[in-house]
Length: 159
Ligand code: ZN
Image (cartoon, rainbow, N blue to C red; front, top):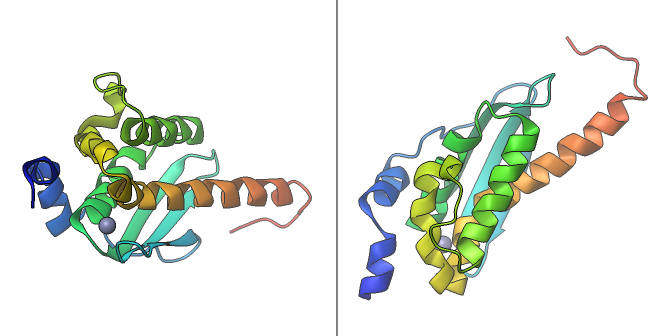
């Protein structure tokens, strides 16, 4: 492992990879998205429950793969849980530019520890690892938006 790559595996990242937060499944009414990154062998199963107001009421994941992919998923769930959908979308976009563009230091404070993954931008293969969970969340958002449209023509009440 070279020095630059080693820098990626900072203590916080390793800690999240070893003891992922919000690890598990959501029982009951939740969206489920599976994502995989064949080039590295990473897999993520993301479960998201959006509240009636559209916020990220609960978010959990299970998965396996490299430390970057699992730590990124863990950090992401901490950032997104409880956030309104608009803010969650902003965080998604902010994280994407963090790992794909060369604007170090300009990442929004809101990303918190997730900013530690900025170093992956030097390693295109690692960007896929870091983005895996966020891509899954992007899909969950798209599913939720689709469902919201269907709800407007449905008269059924959810209990
Ligand atoms: Zn990976």
